[in-house]
Length: 230
Image (cartoon, rainbow, N blue to C red):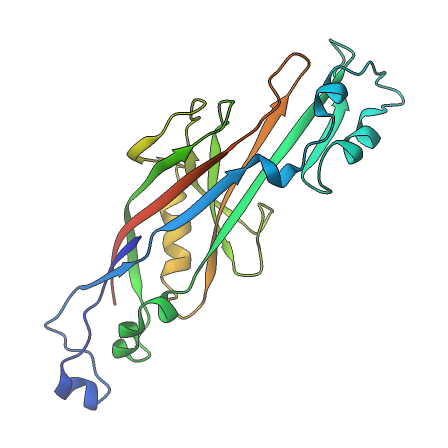
Protein backbone atom coordinates (compact mmCIF):
# COMPACT_ATOMS: atom_id res chain seq x y z
CA UNK A 1 0.00 0.00 0.00
CA UNK A 2 1.36 3.36 -0.91
CA UNK A 3 -0.08 6.34 0.87
CA UNK A 4 0.87 9.58 -0.85
CA UNK A 5 -0.47 12.94 0.22
CA UNK A 6 -0.44 15.06 -2.89
CA UNK A 7 -1.93 18.47 -3.69
CA UNK A 8 -5.72 18.23 -3.78
CA UNK A 9 -7.65 18.15 -7.00
CA UNK A 10 -9.35 21.21 -8.34
CA UNK A 11 -13.01 21.82 -7.63
CA UNK A 12 -15.41 21.17 -10.50
CA UNK A 13 -15.41 24.83 -11.48
CA UNK A 14 -11.64 25.24 -11.28
CA UNK A 15 -11.06 21.98 -13.11
CA UNK A 16 -13.17 23.18 -16.01
CA UNK A 17 -10.75 26.10 -16.32
CA UNK A 18 -7.69 23.86 -16.05
CA UNK A 19 -6.71 25.34 -12.67
CA UNK A 20 -5.97 23.85 -9.26
CA UNK A 21 -7.92 25.33 -6.35
CA UNK A 22 -5.29 27.22 -4.28
CA UNK A 23 -7.37 26.68 -1.11
CA UNK A 24 -6.86 22.91 -1.22
CA UNK A 25 -3.38 21.97 -0.11
CA UNK A 26 -3.24 18.14 0.18
CA UNK A 27 -4.56 15.14 -1.67
CA UNK A 28 -4.82 11.73 0.01
CA UNK A 29 -3.78 8.96 -2.37
CA UNK A 30 -3.87 5.29 -1.28
CA UNK A 31 -2.22 2.63 -3.44
CA UNK A 32 -2.09 -1.14 -3.03
CA UNK A 33 0.76 -2.53 -0.95
CA UNK A 34 3.67 -4.03 -2.84
CA UNK A 35 4.48 -7.68 -2.16
CA UNK A 36 7.81 -9.47 -2.63
CA UNK A 37 8.33 -13.21 -2.26
CA UNK A 38 11.76 -14.75 -1.71
CA UNK A 39 11.43 -18.34 -2.90
CA UNK A 40 14.32 -20.80 -2.75
CA UNK A 41 12.75 -22.64 -5.68
CA UNK A 42 13.87 -19.78 -7.95
CA UNK A 43 17.48 -20.72 -7.36
CA UNK A 44 16.69 -24.28 -8.47
CA UNK A 45 19.49 -25.54 -6.24
CA UNK A 46 21.01 -28.86 -7.30
CA UNK A 47 23.82 -30.52 -5.33
CA UNK A 48 24.57 -27.25 -3.55
CA UNK A 49 25.64 -29.19 -0.46
CA UNK A 50 28.29 -30.93 -2.54
CA UNK A 51 29.46 -27.63 -4.02
CA UNK A 52 30.08 -25.93 -0.66
CA UNK A 53 32.06 -28.94 0.60
CA UNK A 54 34.13 -29.23 -2.58
CA UNK A 55 37.88 -28.74 -2.21
CA UNK A 56 39.29 -25.96 -4.33
CA UNK A 57 42.28 -23.80 -5.11
CA UNK A 58 42.18 -20.04 -5.59
CA UNK A 59 44.33 -20.18 -8.74
CA UNK A 60 42.70 -21.48 -10.84
CA UNK A 61 39.34 -21.37 -9.06
CA UNK A 62 37.00 -24.23 -10.08
CA UNK A 63 34.07 -22.95 -8.00
CA UNK A 64 32.67 -20.52 -10.58
CA UNK A 65 32.20 -23.25 -13.15
CA UNK A 66 30.70 -25.56 -10.53
CA UNK A 67 28.15 -22.90 -9.58
CA UNK A 68 26.72 -23.01 -13.09
CA UNK A 69 25.62 -26.57 -12.35
CA UNK A 70 24.40 -25.84 -8.82
CA UNK A 71 21.70 -23.22 -9.43
CA UNK A 72 19.62 -21.45 -12.06
CA UNK A 73 21.69 -19.32 -14.45
CA UNK A 74 22.38 -15.86 -13.13
CA UNK A 75 21.05 -16.51 -9.63
CA UNK A 76 24.34 -17.38 -7.90
CA UNK A 77 28.10 -17.29 -8.01
CA UNK A 78 30.74 -19.31 -6.19
CA UNK A 79 34.38 -18.75 -5.34
CA UNK A 80 37.10 -20.55 -3.44
CA UNK A 81 37.40 -19.56 0.21
CA UNK A 82 41.10 -18.95 0.88
CA UNK A 83 40.69 -19.98 4.52
CA UNK A 84 38.70 -23.21 4.25
CA UNK A 85 39.78 -24.02 0.68
CA UNK A 86 36.20 -25.01 -0.10
CA UNK A 87 33.64 -23.29 -2.33
CA UNK A 88 31.49 -20.46 -0.95
CA UNK A 89 28.13 -20.08 -2.70
CA UNK A 90 26.44 -16.66 -2.96
CA UNK A 91 22.74 -16.66 -3.82
CA UNK A 92 21.21 -13.46 -5.24
CA UNK A 93 17.87 -12.01 -4.15
CA UNK A 94 16.59 -9.54 -6.74
CA UNK A 95 12.86 -8.75 -6.80
CA UNK A 96 10.96 -5.75 -8.11
CA UNK A 97 7.48 -4.27 -8.28
CA UNK A 98 6.39 -1.57 -10.72
CA UNK A 99 4.95 1.71 -9.43
CA UNK A 100 2.72 3.70 -11.78
CA UNK A 101 1.07 6.44 -9.76
CA UNK A 102 -0.96 7.83 -12.66
CA UNK A 103 -2.33 4.40 -13.64
CA UNK A 104 -3.02 3.12 -10.12
CA UNK A 105 -4.72 6.32 -8.96
CA UNK A 106 -6.48 7.96 -11.92
CA UNK A 107 -7.69 10.81 -9.71
CA UNK A 108 -4.21 12.29 -10.16
CA UNK A 109 -5.41 13.43 -13.57
CA UNK A 110 -7.46 16.12 -11.80
CA UNK A 111 -4.32 18.13 -11.10
CA UNK A 112 -3.89 18.61 -14.84
CA UNK A 113 -0.26 19.14 -15.87
CA UNK A 114 0.89 20.63 -12.59
CA UNK A 115 4.19 19.18 -11.34
CA UNK A 116 4.51 17.66 -7.88
CA UNK A 117 7.00 19.38 -5.64
CA UNK A 118 8.33 18.89 -2.11
CA UNK A 119 7.46 15.20 -1.88
CA UNK A 120 8.28 13.97 1.62
CA UNK A 121 8.48 10.29 2.54
CA UNK A 122 7.02 9.95 6.03
CA UNK A 123 7.48 6.22 6.60
CA UNK A 124 8.15 2.90 4.90
CA UNK A 125 7.09 -0.20 6.81
CA UNK A 126 7.51 -3.86 5.96
CA UNK A 127 5.53 -6.88 7.08
CA UNK A 128 6.55 -10.54 6.87
CA UNK A 129 3.20 -12.27 6.45
CA UNK A 130 4.49 -15.79 5.73
CA UNK A 131 7.86 -17.47 6.23
CA UNK A 132 8.81 -21.08 5.66
CA UNK A 133 12.50 -20.36 5.06
CA UNK A 134 14.77 -22.74 6.96
CA UNK A 135 17.56 -20.15 7.26
CA UNK A 136 17.77 -16.55 8.43
CA UNK A 137 17.38 -14.14 5.56
CA UNK A 138 20.17 -11.56 5.22
CA UNK A 139 19.67 -7.83 5.41
CA UNK A 140 17.73 -6.73 2.33
CA UNK A 141 18.20 -3.39 0.58
CA UNK A 142 15.25 -1.41 -0.81
CA UNK A 143 15.95 0.62 -3.95
CA UNK A 144 14.04 2.99 -6.23
CA UNK A 145 14.95 2.75 -9.90
CA UNK A 146 13.79 3.69 -13.39
CA UNK A 147 11.16 1.37 -14.88
CA UNK A 148 13.76 -0.26 -17.14
CA UNK A 149 15.87 -1.34 -14.14
CA UNK A 150 14.75 -4.59 -12.49
CA UNK A 151 17.79 -5.47 -10.39
CA UNK A 152 20.24 -3.37 -8.36
CA UNK A 153 22.78 -1.51 -10.50
CA UNK A 154 24.32 1.95 -10.74
CA UNK A 155 20.98 3.46 -11.83
CA UNK A 156 19.15 2.21 -8.72
CA UNK A 157 19.13 4.51 -5.70
CA UNK A 158 19.22 3.08 -2.20
CA UNK A 159 16.25 3.90 0.02
CA UNK A 160 16.88 1.79 3.11
CA UNK A 161 17.28 -1.69 4.54
CA UNK A 162 15.11 -4.45 5.96
CA UNK A 163 16.91 -6.18 8.84
CA UNK A 164 17.55 -9.95 8.84
CA UNK A 165 14.53 -12.15 9.54
CA UNK A 166 15.09 -15.38 11.52
CA UNK A 167 14.08 -18.68 9.93
CA UNK A 168 10.35 -19.35 10.12
CA UNK A 169 9.48 -16.05 11.83
CA UNK A 170 6.92 -13.50 10.71
CA UNK A 171 6.77 -9.82 11.60
CA UNK A 172 4.03 -7.25 11.96
CA UNK A 173 4.49 -3.85 10.31
CA UNK A 174 7.98 -2.64 11.18
CA UNK A 175 9.85 0.47 9.95
CA UNK A 176 12.72 -0.03 7.54
CA UNK A 177 16.07 1.57 8.33
CA UNK A 178 16.42 4.55 5.99
CA UNK A 179 19.70 5.38 4.31
CA UNK A 180 20.84 8.99 4.98
CA UNK A 181 19.48 10.09 1.58
CA UNK A 182 16.89 7.34 1.26
CA UNK A 183 13.79 9.47 1.68
CA UNK A 184 15.06 11.96 -0.89
CA UNK A 185 15.88 9.14 -3.33
CA UNK A 186 12.35 7.77 -3.31
CA UNK A 187 10.78 11.24 -3.28
CA UNK A 188 12.66 12.15 -6.46
CA UNK A 189 10.92 9.31 -8.31
CA UNK A 190 7.51 9.95 -6.79
CA UNK A 191 7.57 13.67 -7.55
CA UNK A 192 7.12 12.93 -11.26
CA UNK A 193 3.83 11.05 -10.99
CA UNK A 194 3.54 10.52 -14.76
CA UNK A 195 6.72 8.47 -14.97
CA UNK A 196 6.53 4.84 -13.75
CA UNK A 197 9.41 3.47 -11.69
CA UNK A 198 10.35 0.32 -9.81
CA UNK A 199 10.81 -0.58 -6.18
CA UNK A 200 13.54 -3.23 -5.94
CA UNK A 201 14.44 -5.50 -3.04
CA UNK A 202 17.96 -6.91 -3.34
CA UNK A 203 20.27 -8.98 -1.19
CA UNK A 204 22.82 -11.78 -1.16
CA UNK A 205 22.72 -14.99 0.86
CA UNK A 206 26.10 -16.61 1.56
CA UNK A 207 26.25 -20.39 1.95
CA UNK A 208 29.52 -21.84 3.25
CA UNK A 209 30.71 -25.34 4.11
CA UNK A 210 28.50 -26.80 6.85
CA UNK A 211 25.69 -24.27 6.37
CA UNK A 212 22.08 -25.31 5.88
CA UNK A 213 21.04 -25.22 2.23
CA UNK A 214 18.19 -22.68 1.91
CA UNK A 215 14.68 -24.00 1.34
CA UNK A 216 11.21 -22.50 1.64
CA UNK A 217 9.89 -19.02 0.92
CA UNK A 218 9.16 -15.70 2.63
CA UNK A 219 6.56 -13.09 1.70
CA UNK A 220 7.26 -9.44 2.49
CA UNK A 221 4.74 -6.61 2.09
CA UNK A 222 6.00 -3.03 1.76
CA UNK A 223 3.88 -0.02 2.77
CA UNK A 224 4.91 3.56 1.93
CA UNK A 225 3.48 6.75 3.43
CA UNK A 226 4.34 10.20 2.07
CA UNK A 227 2.96 13.67 1.46
CA UNK A 228 3.59 16.30 -1.18
CA UNK A 229 2.50 19.63 -2.58
CA UNK A 230 2.57 21.57 -5.81
